[in-house]
Length: 158
Image (spheres, rainbow, N blue to C red):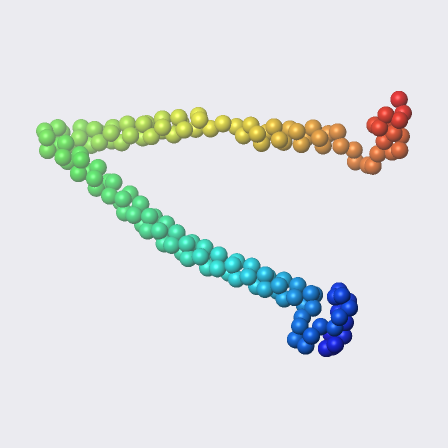
């Protein structure tokens, strides 16, 4: 807008030199707000990216630790069997006792898992919501109501 021209949204006076109109102020505020939102999103992405990197690093470390621990199981089993053998039992019975201990541990962990699975309940609220939606859709009409149906619904026609 040229200097000295009247702003249509103003009270008829010409703006002073360097003064901005309401539209210009609104546009500037909108641009500033948009830039602020974009900056906030960029900051959130940067923070999340750093957390994801830390999480991946921790997950890899945990995976390596699990592999090392899993590799140690046969060694510890053999050591336990030879330890029992050192107490005076034959080597066969020693390994059988260690295997039995592992089977007992597996049964106990399986029972704990079964107990946890039995506590799982069906999603009652979701099922009820889906049934209500299905009921509404069953009664829905695929076409607009006729004038007669509208009049009957409003009680104008018996």
